[in-house]
Image 1: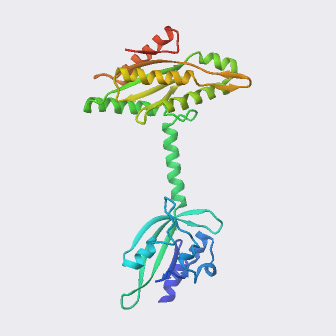
Image 2: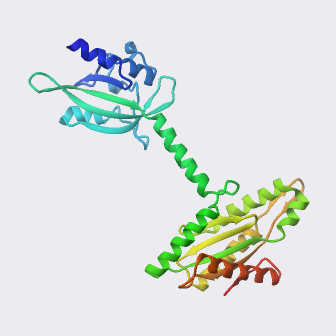
Image 3: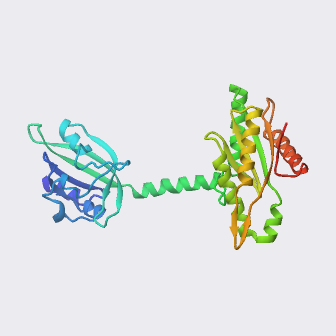
Amino acid sequence: MQYNYMNLFENMYDGVYFVDRERRITYWNKAAEKITGFAFEEVVGKQCSDNILIHIDGSGNSLCKGMCPLAATIKDGSTREAEVYLHHKKGHRVPVWIRATPLRDENNNIVGGAELFTDSSAQHLMLQRIQDLEELALIDTLTQLSNRKHLESEMHNSLQEMERYNLSFAILFIDIDNFKQFNDTYGHDVGDQILQTLAQTLKSAARPFDLFGRWGGEEFIGIIRNVDRDALVTIGNRCRILVEKSYMTFKDAFINVSISLGGTLAQRGDSIESLLKRADRLMYESKKRGRNCLTTD
C-alpha cells in the first residue's frame, strides 16, 4: 500500500514534499524536482529554514524562516492554501499555489506536514494576457491615455451618476493648435512625440478622479468630475499653461505647442452627443479668439 502511494506521488504533475516537525524535508517527488530545479539529493535532509526554496509572499516577505503556511499547519493541524513564490535553482522566481496539510501517526499525533504545490506560471501568463487585451481595448496605444471607447463609457457612467446622485462633472474638449503644420514641417515621428508629450502633461495636470483620453487625431477630452464653473476654468487653464510651457527638442530646434479648449458643465437631460457638441463648439470659439485659450459657457 505504501508503495502505491509513493508511486502515485512520483507520477503527479504537482510537486509534493514531506517534512517532520522540525520542518526537515523527508520526501521530494519528481515534479518538485522539475518545478524547482532542485534534485532529491539536494533537499532531502535539509530544513526549510536552510532557505533552499526561499519562499516569499506577494509583498516580498520571507516565509521560510518564520511562520509559513506549512509551519502553521504543523502547529495547529489545519490545512491551508496560499499563493507564494519559490526560488528556482537557476535564480528566478516561480509562482506556485500551495496546499499544506498535517501528517499524523496512528495515534493522530501530528508528526510533520505535507505540501503540494502547483506551478501557476501559465495561469499568471493567461491573466496577464487578459489584462493586456483589456488594456488594448481601452487604452490608446500611442499616448497610453484612455481611448475613444473608454471615454464614451466613462461619459455614459458620469451622466448616470449625475442623474441618480446629482454628481457634477464637466467636459474639456482639447485640440492642438496648428498640429498639421508641425507634421508637415518635422514629420509624423515628431508629431507622434508631440502627442505623447501632451498626453504626459495632461496626466500631470489631472486630479486623481479626473480622466483624460485621446478622442482621435490631435483631439483630446478631459472628464472633469466634481466641479463648478470656477473649478473648470482653473483646471482647464492649468492644462493650457502646462502645455504652453512644455517643449521638446528636435535636432537644434525647440518645439512647443499650444492647445485650444472648450469646457462645459454637464446638464440634466444631456446626452454624450449634446455634451460633446457643446464642448466642441466652445473649443472652436477658442480657435476664433486666437488659439491657446479656454472658452466655457
